[in-house]
Image (cartoon, rainbow, N blue to C red; front, top):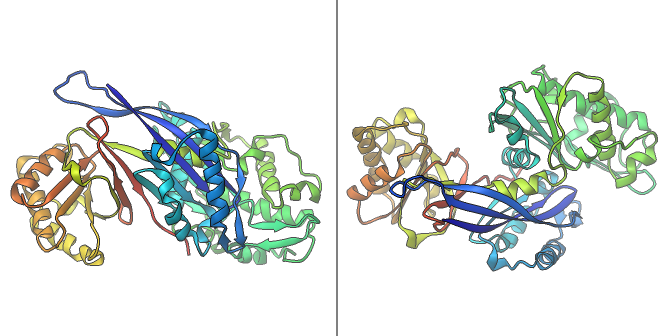
Length: 469
């Protein structure tokens, strides 16, 4: 038996906005009817929108009305109604995530994405979704090499390293095609404050109101390429270069294969030539110069380059097709309380799971931050826990929730024992509703959406609601 659900992906980027619709097939793949094994077996993109310039009221404000209208237009062109959507992802990326009304825009658009939605402006998740959409995860399966995908957009570069199909590192940089913008005469109209220091260190004559020399722009773009390659080869960065990381640095996992996606990648994998300033400013920014310069740099080097499956559409396809996960069949839940949205994660380290009092102290110390909302307790847990281990975890969790007014206990386990744990929690504290799901990996700072059951399994979206300051 199989079920099909419709998913939407909406990517509101620094330069462009795109929408895609995907059909996701969920099926019981178990050979025995006694132990179901529900998986996502197929993901097909059924509609791709036009690529629009992201509508802005000012440099610092998104035009919500125009944005809503273009999204409604694409729903109509696709022949899809909002009520048809089961899940989806609306993401605001790059410099657009820093706009003063970014969070309000996400809230206003959330009804376009069904029962639950991932809303993100965090570089790590953007990187992973773009990597999936570009095909980097698929390339890394079945080989011993690590594959890095650089998703280079207008405001940021989001990078992810895959090993055997799974992301093992992700990070983001303030490097992109629209960090410098021009009018139709080639006069600089905008320079991102994120690159002021780098421009000063390089002693470049780049400032608002002047028509720059091509060689000056090349020096800046070449410094971007140098930073990207230093990171990929685990070489030390200067302080100014290091400051371009967003949030955190990379984990220094050296890749063997390179891939590129994002709007700039359209020029990396093309024959577009930049010989004069007019070639640079064709789209009003340095994107063409950055892309063509990366292509020319890689031609003379012995890097292994693979062309990405998707370029400018990689993030939106990753968001629409790869944001949803399915929790395993060995789960415990009270269906009447689903769906649940925007539940913050409290992540426990495995080392405290063997002590009931440690579990209690950790949860109660963190839960004080969430006095007016639900929380979900998450941890990896042992692969095959004993009866005693499950009892200890259950007692620590129940003791913690006894101090809360909430009538719902949510537990998210990475390993496969949610049903046993959930039933044990229920037996100890029967007057509260229980949701205990497994097969889902989370981190502190994540939020989780849990949907209604599909084919006996639970659809889940793990999301990062972080806006860059």
